[in-house]
Length: 363
Image 1: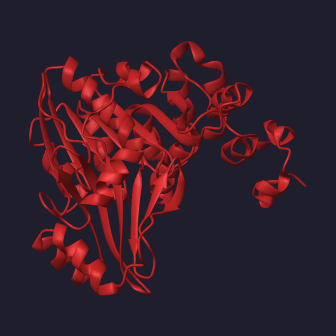
Image 2: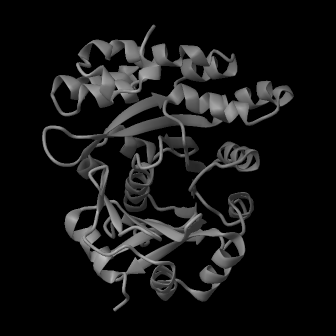
């Protein structure tokens, strides 16, 4: 048994999402969004290095020593999978482990809108799941891909860094590729995927202009492409994609994106106050002809209004979902204010102004 195994088991038993290890500190777990120290001694450099190197393949250790940080996936049969990052900081070596459940939950089990299952059946187009780190983007995408895997008879290729949820082939053929192990970059793998007869392509993250351009191109040649971005709203997502390109290319990319985009799902995680646990709030933009026209004409600022009037198409506003949770006493007014888009809707609910970011307060 590896020396870190008891900490991994503790994560599973308590429902913790993350484990943090660093020199000069005891191990910490993130439980319901908060870091908590484990009753254990402070780790020293040699002890922690021995723990981390015990569970990592030689090629991962080599990359870590050369580059100072490395990502990889770790699977403990019968327990869980983990997304792992080793890095160096001023006191020495450190690591972060994010637990990935072995069972892929369905859209229904996650409490997500049913329209996500419909998106899994689209014949082509770009579907983005966005949100800050730790907002459940990978979990949502896994649920959608699993639904496609069960309901379609197609070829699914995933390109991830690292592979998180493992998808066994059901009605679909599923091939999963990992950066650093099976390919050098998202762009290389995406370019190659177009020659591998895919129907659905999952790109773990659209990190650069080349990857974004290739993802959009893939949708225009008849593929479904799922990916993620670190943005907090549908409108911000569209702007982020366009702003990646030089000014003289933005008119063209607006037109191309308007043809490719099918939906943007933006989600944010909240700590529950009614019981232990967390809950996700979701904004959904469906690319109707009217929405595509706004993108083409550069009127992105009108997208929030389009979401408000597009409920019959399955659209929903993040702020409306947050307000619903607040009215049902599921989340705190302070967190609702902090994570809302239009903060003026929530400021009167906040009793303790000291508990929120004072820079967000209206003058």
